[in-house]
Amino acid sequence: LSVELCLDDMVAVARAAGLEVADRPDSQDACFGEGSFAEALRQHFGDDPQPGEIHGPSGLVGTHRGVHHFTRGQRRGTGVSLGVPAFVSSIDPDTHRVEVSTDPEVLQDRWLSATELRWWDAPPERAEVQVRYRSEAVPARLRWEAPVLQVWLEEPVRAVMPGQVVAVYLG
Image (tube, rainbow, N blue to C red; front, side, top):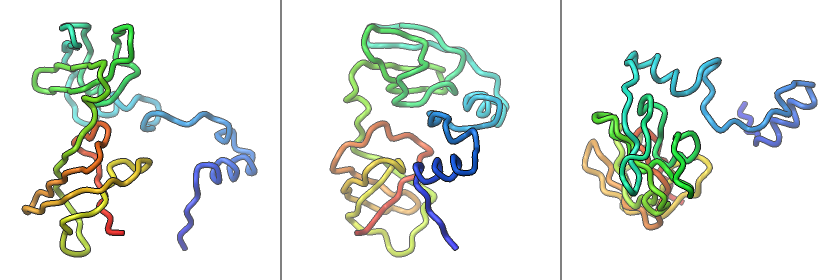
């Protein structure tokens, strides 16, 4: 038996059962019990966080306590204020450097590569590709050179990151 519920359905079920969680606001972060996502990463990988610099369009704009606190596209919680919205545009874990940009266009990606693929059939040359579960699938050209799938997106996708799942659809 497979049951699929949307968020509204789950809230209604929780409310009908008298659960307090029904009226909590949506989470904007991964849930890892008592600690933050960044702390869960630190514990899992066992490294002590290395402080680093945050650079913006005009140079050094701040410092940080570790790159594990950041993700590309992040806007809140960066610890810097540039007077206009600033987004994490790149992270270099080797130098511990985080770049922020006030230009949201730097987050628009038109290309990605994927590995560790699961195919039910031979990879197609054209398909629709979805990077985030809440985003729309976009048309793409694909090129399979085992073990890597190269994907050229016909429409930009915001802040594609290593480690994300990419779904390829035909129809």
